[in-house]
Length: 79
Image (cartoon, rainbow, N blue to C red):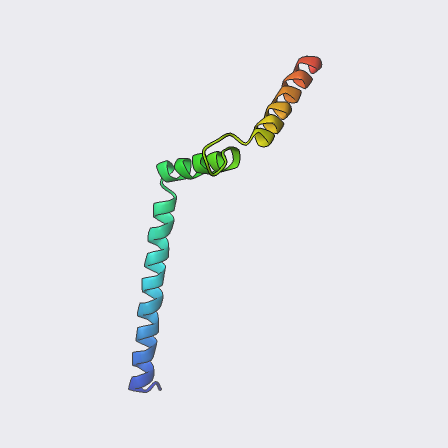
């Protein structure tokens, strides 16, 4: 049989776990909002193609343009 101290500690552990669970669920709901997901993805693309001053990283843009051009050419050749 549990002592009153053990019961109190167990109840406190359950409450702490419940609080963490609620916090985690609220964070998941917040992050999963479509607007937030879109904004995060747009920011990732901007971070990839823009430097810290807002200028275009030409090396990355050129590689992307080259890959896109290669895909277009390959598709034209396979038709």
